[in-house]
Amino acid sequence: MEKPASDAQQALVSKTHWRDWVKRIAAFSGLEIVSRVLQMAASLLIVRLMVKEEFAWYSLAVAFQGMLGFVTMIGAGSALFAMGGPLIEDRRGMGQLLHAVGRWRFWLMAFSLPVLLPIYGFLLMRNGCPPLTLALLLVFGGLTMWLEIQRHMLSAPLELAQRYNFLQKVDCISAVVRLAGVGVLIACAWIKPVPVMLISVVLVGWLPLVLMRKASHAIADPDVREAPEAMKKRLRALAIAATPSALSYVAEAQYATLFVALAGFTAGVAELGALGRIGLLLTVPAAILGRVIQPRLALIREDTDLRRAWLRTAGFGLLIGTGMIVGTWLFQDLLLWLLGSEYQYVRADLMFYAGFLGLSFLTNANGSIIEARGWLKRAWVRPFVVIGAMLLATPIVSVATVPGAIVLMYVGCLANLATDLFLIIRGFRGLSDVHG
Image 1 (cartoon, rainbow, N blue to C red):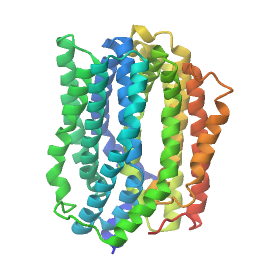
Image 2 (spheres, rainbow, N blue to C red):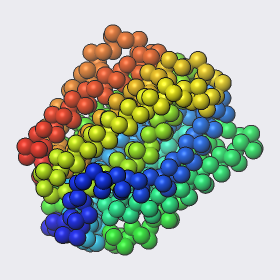
Image 3 (cartoon, rainbow, N blue to C red):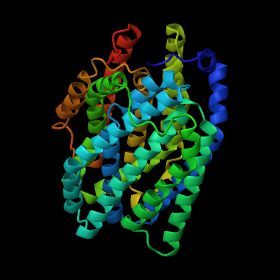
Image 4 (tube, one colour):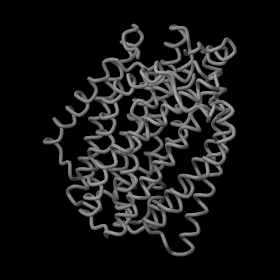
C-alpha cells in the first residue's frame, strides 16, 4: 500500500509563493554551477583536441549510450516520481519500488542491446571507424549504461528526499576526477575515442556508486528482493503508458543525427556533436528542473497549488530558454573559440541550434509535470504526432545536412510541446492518471 505524503513532507512542498521557489533554487545553484562548469570544461577540451573524424565516432558512441538511456527509462522515471513520492518515509516500500524499477530497466537493456548494437555498429562502420575501435566504443557504451542504471537506483530516493547538496557534492567529485582524467590523456597526447570513453566515462561512472550507497540505503532498504504485486502491476501500467512518449523523445533526439550518419557525412556528425556540447550550458537549469522542481511537483496535493507550481515551472522554462538564445547571440565568438578551430564556420548553425535548445528547455519544463504526476493516459498519441510530423517534414528539408537536421529537431520539439499541453489539460481534469 502506498502511504500519502506526511504532513511534514507536505509542508516542504505546499508553499507555492514565488519567493520560496527562488530561495530554494538559489540555494541549489551554487555547487551545481561548480560541478557543471567542470563537466563542460572536460567536454570542450575533448571537442577542441580530438581529431574531427574521431570525434564523430565518439559522438556516435555517446548517441548509442543516450539511446540506451532513453529506452531503459521507459516507465522508470514516471514510476519513481509518481509512486515514490508517497513512499519517501517508508524505507521498505521505497526499497521494493527501486528493486522493481531496477529489474525493469535491466530487462529493457537486455532486450534493446540486440537491436541497437547492429544499428550503431553499422553507422560507425559507415563513417570509417576501425573494427577494434568500433567494438570497444560499443562495449564501453553498454557498460556505462549499466553503471548509469545503478547510479539512478541510488540517486532517486535522495532526489525525492531533497538531499540536493549531497548529490551536488557527489557530482563535483566525479567532475573533478573526470577533468583530471582528461588532463592525463592530454598530457600523454592520447585524446582518442576509446581512452576518452574509458577514463572519462566508464571509470568515473563507478565513483557515484561508492559515494551514494550509504546515504541512499538509509532511505531505501537494499535487502528487499520482491515488490508487492500491486506495485509491479502499476509499474507495468506506467511503463506501457510511457512507451509512446519514450519512442517520440528518441525520434526527436536521434532521428536527425541518424540520417546524417547514415549518409556517411562524418563531418556533419562531428558538427552536431560539437553543437550538442553547447547544450551543456543548460545543465544547471536542467538539474534544477529535475532535482528541485520535479520532486516537488510529485508531492503537491492541492490542485490550486499544483496549477500555480506548473505555471511557475513553465515560466522558468521560458526564462531559461530565452536566456539561452540571447546568451548565445551575445557570446557566439567565445563559444566558437571554445569549440576549436575546426568549427569556426558553424556560426549560423550555432545560433539556429541555440534556438532549438531554448525551445527544447521550455518544452521539458512545461511537460515535467506529466512525469511527476504520472499523467500518461492517452500518451499513445505522442508518437503519431511527433514521428508523423518529422516524417512529413523529411522530404521538404535536406536531412543529410546540419541545418536540415536541426530543422527536424525543431519539428519534433514543437510536436512534443503540443502533445504535452494536451496531456496536461487532461491531467488537470483528472483524466490522465494511470492505475495498475
